Amino acid sequence: MKSFFSLVYLLLVLAFFSHITWAVKGNSLCKQTGMGEIRPHSVTITEFGAVGDGVTLNTKAFQNAIFYLNSFADKGGAKLFVPAGRWLTGSFDLISHLTLWLDKDAIILGSMNSDDWPVVDPLPSYGRGRELPGGRHRSLIYGRNLTDVIITGDNGTIDGQGSVWWNWFRSKTLNYTRPHLVELMNSTGVVISNLTFLNSPFWTIHPVYCSHVIVQDVTILAPLDSPNTDGIDPDSSDDVCIEDCYISTGDDLISIKSGWDEYGISFARPSRNIIIRRLTGHNQNGSGIAIGSEMSGGVSEVYAENIYFFNSSTGIILKTARGRGGYVRNIYISNVTLVGVDTAIFFNSNFSQHPDEFYDPNSLPVIERITFKDVIGDNIKVAGLLKGIEGDSFRHICLLNITLDVTTKSPWNCSNIQGYSSLVSPEICEPLKESIYPKHYSDCYLLPNHLRSSACFLESCTPLYERARPLFMLWKYM
Image (tube, rainbow, N blue to C red; front, side):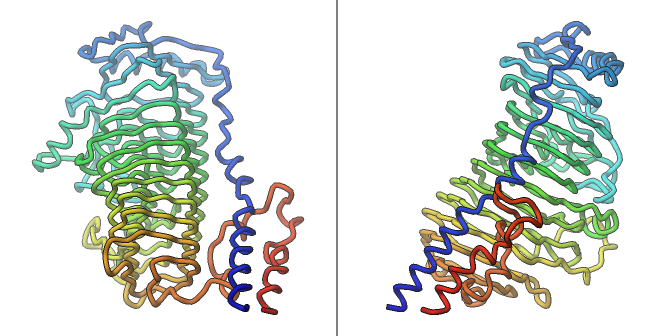
């Protein structure tokens, strides 16, 4: 009889947590404040001599148009309209209070001449180019120190034509790190939506040192064997919303970063308050959602839900190493469906690329309070490779309601890790066998512990444990 009530108790707890919404934060963070705004001034790229034949280089036309529109930045902003056509261009800068709008049949094409992508200084949180010492090529669409920037349209396309860069990378003939397709730096109020991004030379969308970023309703595609063509990489950025995206690339679909080894530690700008919702995609060489490996400035408060990955190498991965320092904490990932994924959850603590010989190998990352909830998987090779660092165990790792159809005889491989679990199949590894309920639910980072329902606001809310008290009293008297 007691086992029956124990089962009832667990089901009640699951129902209780599933009905505590964290949409309060998500809805406010993901609300588009500028999309419905009509810019009072608008020009078309053809007014500045652009030719959409896919052959004529239009870099000057984009630069001149944006230079002209800068005069309206303090008059309500302006819109640059790109009509149907194939608009070849090199790198160009955006300005504040600008909407770059692509028509349904508009395609912006990145030049295949590296001279059209200027070399700029390395990011201070990296200390050098990510691939090579020294500088890096500037992204095709670039901006820094901006406010209120919108890149959108009627599902137009931005194609980096990255194959030439991939070949240079493979042949080791590059002198500088490859460019991203879109990079916004030190900017706030950024919206990227309703577009298709193709064939980035390197990472596709890279907000770095940014605040209040929305990436919504975008499709990102690159060949599955294209090197390092990450989809969306928030980097030392906060208040980021990514939702309703489809991504299929040669590396991580989303990778959250915050600087590299001693440079990231010194720069000390974390990535925090990041929401990922309704993400679908696949890859062969990366993961669906990654944290790191460049996480030396810290990563925290990441919320991901309603995720679907298929035919992929890894579902969720945390990448770090000795020398990284920093921290990853307060991560909550729920409602994940995996189909045909080699490894569902992977903690890789031996990602040993370093910017130079000056990193401190004794600088160890702090990894704690990471929760996976409501994960199902079919045709999974390995449920989890969860490996911390010797002498630096990852703490408070929690798995709740995980059901994976695993094809190997050893579904879990865990070391230097500590945490709790409930309702996990196949049977979890020994370091995580202790039950979450009733003693350890407060040790796990469950989002409802930190957000309130729509009926509450901050301190006026009844704490979650008080509202849950009847459930725990029920367990006590079983």
